[in-house]
Length: 166
Picture 1 (cartoon, rainbow, N blue to C red):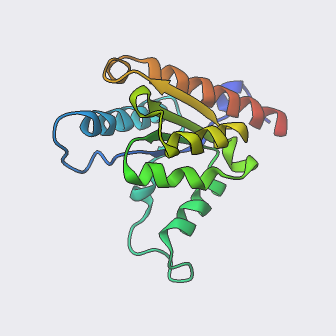
Picture 2 (tube, rainbow, N blue to C red):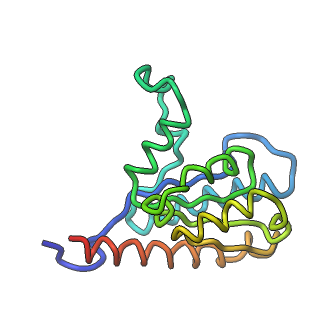
């Protein structure tokens, strides 16, 4: 039995540009830094927050032999996914949430300057299935705590869901 609500911790994937890649100064570099800050803050809050690429210690499981299916398995296994949409991989990963039970796990973040294309339209479809979809103003919101506040709101909602499911 849970002693307090705080005992409900989550397994959270954090998608976005890799902080281990050297980018030219600007949007991608700033987004990679924010991704790391979000992961680190979630860990400090007591959650298991990881980058999916850190879970891949070798090649993809030979029984799967497909990185997309492997990430789909991770999304199914984890409680929540934060996706800082901006890199090609993060855009591609939007398709991982096209089922209602998986969409409800997603917190999607888009730069306001990137809301006119097909990726944002796909994100709106994922939102219709239950995802949280947020936009932010670059660069101001990456340097403030606005994104982390929105991530924590989604964490709260997922924790409430786990509470009532137990």
